[in-house]
Image (cartoon, rainbow, N blue to C red; front, side, top):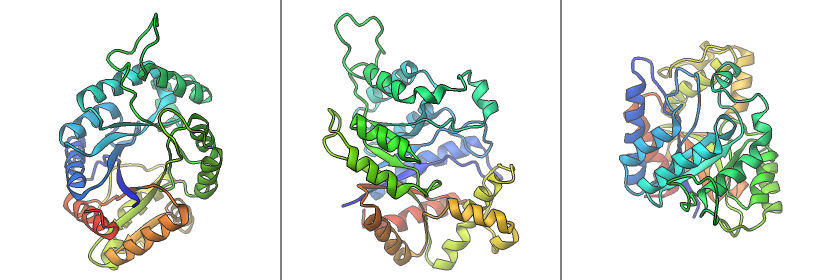
Length: 328
């Protein structure tokens, strides 16, 4: 059976603040755990007023401390922003605190704008060294070699499971070459989903971590009691994506009755292209949409983005998604 997981963006809502977003994220994780979701991942973003997950490893700890069985991880750490040694220390520490529950997804995008990238003191070409950085990080998480001069304490020997994230065939090739599981960000970059999955499976080489290909794909899913209500709830995400193209990124907005009054023709076209991999509707609609997605992609795991403004309504969406996938 295809596993069901959740990507948590830690959205800050209008009329609320970052502290509430962080506590809501932990509440969401506990709710997802009770519903049978496999894992919850936190995305690294910087310099975005509407997302409170910049200190990703700290948010992972916050969520893991409020749950007991669900896997918790980064989806992902944007490795060019960081020293592999420091990330090994952070996630190795998390593994010591929450053994058997920590994942480390790795991406090579900056997760921010150029101003914030400069503020993080990373070289402009840091992403070019992503494959080497992954190998370095993997080595720091492994058992240290005899006489090894520098050891990531207390991370050494934890072998935190690594995932490669991507929105193109680059990540697919790297994940296949290293024998690592692969997660495709089709919830916002749908264009190359199928070619990337095919590339990953065809090129996969078994490794100590993974003996066969393991692929995950992201999809936007908003569920409600009726199709009409779900479509209304979806306007929150549609407005957020439309705002990307106007430079007006801000706090998460409450849903509106008519999205056509919000966006221009061009913004609509661009937003709907990015949100092409979305399922919005009642349980029946979501069940059919998710089944079609799994049938098309043959992924081992589906990672849901359910961007709903109201917290309790979002919890209800996750319940209905679980019901649609027959998780619980």
